[in-house]
Image (cartoon, rainbow, N blue to C red):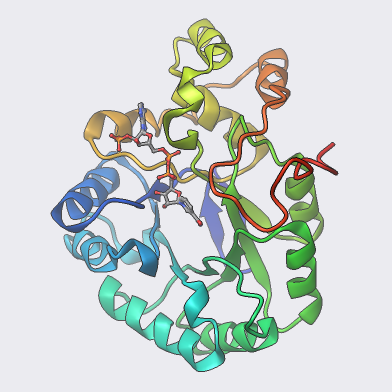
Length: 276
Ligand SMILES: NC(=O)c1ccc[n+]([C@@H]2O[C@H](COP(=O)([O-])OP(=O)(O)OC[C@H]3O[C@@H](n4cnc5c(N)ncnc54)[C@H](OP(=O)(O)O)[C@@H]3O)[C@@H](O)[C@H]2O)c1
């Protein structure tokens, strides 16, 4: 299996993250990723690179129908009409007539989630987006959003890597029919410094980065690593043609490390509760 089914279509298990890539560097990196075989691109209004991603898509390397394109609306634009306008802006900047996935980038407790999801439902009805979802939602907030029943929630994109193995949240997402997606799968470079990943990788002739991605792959979690140059871009695609043994999977799955890079509501010393 190389993709996870969503309410509408499916999300490839390996995608390409674009945070901090801008302008020509971004366009070039996305074009390289498409040439190397990525078919899933992750961006956001906040990354200020939608026009550059759009320029790469317009290079015509891959037909639009073969691509899975995600972008996100920021927490300051979650009121009903603002969401509609944010989608319109994203479509224009990306130069496409639909998004495969439109995410609420971060929750905003001051805005009614019902209003936000009503706008998402309208965008789905109009064909402007194929799936809607959330990002940085705890299990509790996700359950609240799902209980509204206003729009089907396909994805919760959260920080997830071997040093932040949020098993409890992953389980809760599965139970709600929501695909958890991993952002920052390398914890911005900290993961590869963990000698335990290097030791496991050495047994397969794989890098620590590939071990982290393969572990997510076997967990059934789509990951969106960011890389700037062709070396890293190619290396991160090398996850589908090998497998971690049960024992090695268990080593990574039980590192017992809890290191959150991006703090979110409720995060702190007790953040790990209910993670069995
Ligand atoms: N929803 C959210 O709130 C949220 C938050 C954070 C991130 N994201 C998404 O998730 C994506 C990935 O997360 P991230 O950008 O934080 O970090 P990341 O993917 O965990 O790590 C990126 C870093 O790893 C390096 N790297 C990548 N592949 C490598 C390899 N094979 N060998 C050695 N180094 C390698 C990159 O270097 P080079 O660039 O030099 O290749 C870069 O410094 C973002 O780009 C964004 O799309 C979403």
